[in-house]
Image (cartoon, rainbow, N blue to C red; front, side):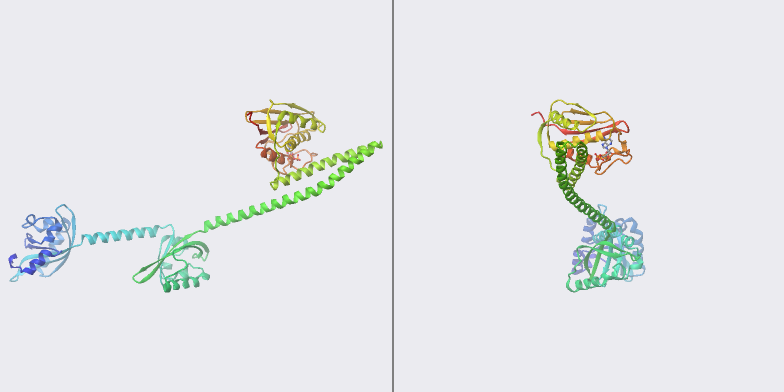
Length: 496
Ligand code: ADP
């Protein structure tokens, strides 16, 4: 068959089709190829005509091509074929088409190949299957449970995480409804209603939102989850994808936090009530005590004037007990002020040595021990004179109280560039090392103390609060049966 025999239309079709067409002699020599063939495989006519067709086929496909082509000759049938040709620059081109044999007077003369280039289609398929693969990887490894249901609420698929969270195997749930598997009974109706409403109106209360709800495990245990549902329409059917995360642990933490807050609130309320009670109780006690004190002092004057020494002695004793009681009530009153945050300072600038001297002078009258005072270089501090006197008095009273029968107490002042430090030292019963941190706690008293030391365990707590309010620190050093040193520091007023 000569090419000149082709009629005009056939020639036009041959040259202008997108299909790749070649005519090959029985021995495989290329007789002619069309433009699409040459263009796709990047050759010119000269480079192709007279060459073997098998030189243009991917070596891996040559055998297959040869066999199919042979069948088209021997069986005289149109043979479908998928093959790969190689371009001049070495690229693979996927071809799909038919090979057939042309006969002249019943004798085979040429084979004809007509192919479509499916390379692009193949790439797209590959890309699609890659993205499907990626989706599948995400589905399998998602940190949340992913459950896919259809418009009838039937579970179509769920991922390994869902299996882990809910405890059902995939086989146990596929084909069942979401309502009958993981939704607690009391929510089932509203869930189905929600789906129905969505299918009718396109609106759903839980769609594209994250809500907190409970779900059921296979062992019927109800637990908290975060749930968000998205909808997709595929082939006129609605699919719903539910993303579910188990928040049992978060809920537990949340509950613990709420409980702790509640406890704190209770403690705070209790503290406030306590403060209120102490304040009222102290006032109620203080008023009659002041009256008793006044009458005792008046009686003392009268008894003195009337020369009644026994009465004077009794009244002196009564007076000193009234003082003790007043001291304790004042401690309670201060404590209540601290509890309700009402202990305030009234600060003034003070020459420190002079100030401590005056306090010691008044303490000397009531302390059986002699008090030795070592001054520091002259310096100024900003203090509440009454409150700080209370601190020094407390430390000296304790030093005196807890060193019975001993003859002296030492008070030392030293100054650093920033602070003045006051130390009160006794040589009494001392405090065990493991108790030293606790003695500044309210109501703390050393249990192992010898008997006969009265007190409420408030003085040091109040003293430490007063020192802290001044911006200072308080601490103690001690050794059992050797004595204690209580010190506090106060910030100095800078020279300028
Ligand atoms: P109290 O009214 O009991 O003396 P404080 O708060 O002043 O209360 O002191 C708390 C506790 O610290 C005391 O009960 C006592 O056990 C111990 N303490 C305080 N000062 C001294 C000291 N100078 N020597 C030994 N123990 C002391």
